[in-house]
Image 1 (spheres, rainbow, N blue to C red):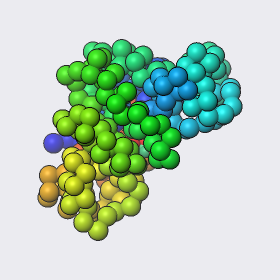
Image 2 (cartoon, rainbow, N blue to C red):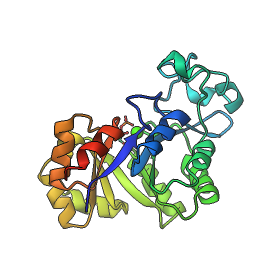
Image 3 (spheres, rainbow, N blue to C red):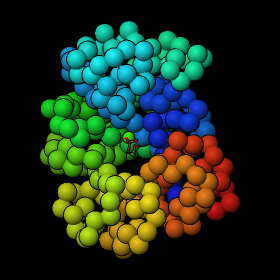
Image 4 (cartoon, helix red, strand yellow):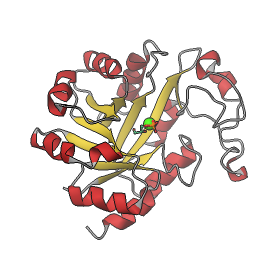
Length: 242
Ligand code: G3P
Ligand code: CA
């Protein structure tokens, strides 16, 4: 099976990450999957951004959780990247789900719950996905594996992926205990014997963040299940030779 190409925060290299234009571009180039990150606002709305703070990717300052959605929508999430995207707003998960309504690929939702800042986010996300994307493939990932365990209790059919930096001693056993079907591994950890071991146990391996053409090629040669990349168009083009 060919290695899938997942667009990291959309087409992050050439669009403002985690915005609607970034996801539109990821779809336009034919990405097999789209990865994004979710947080909760003060009024418990699910929004898409990477950092817990809005400082880096908007013209505002402070924590997402201290703003209501209406307040957050006042900030500009595009100008930091390029004047061309001036006025771009922080998207809600609902907006992205609506944008992807006819998308034939996979949506990878990462819970940014590493510091347990958003109690209840898993149930809110499950409810939205159920309402807007009921029969389409969604993979939930998180560095906070407790978040994934909570998601499994909410939806026993949820497809889970453990986000990991390091290779684990017995990677398949732990993955199965959590109820995950995949590991999303930091690229140096994924491009290793661990990938072979995981595959032997039927566990998928997706590597992040694979941006260098040589590492993309190595991932294709090793038969990883997916790469998560800022450059989906480059990766899709390179993959034509495999
Ligand atoms: O899902 C892979 C990757 O997105 C995890 O790291 O920091 O880019 O969210 P980060
Ligand atoms: Ca992410």
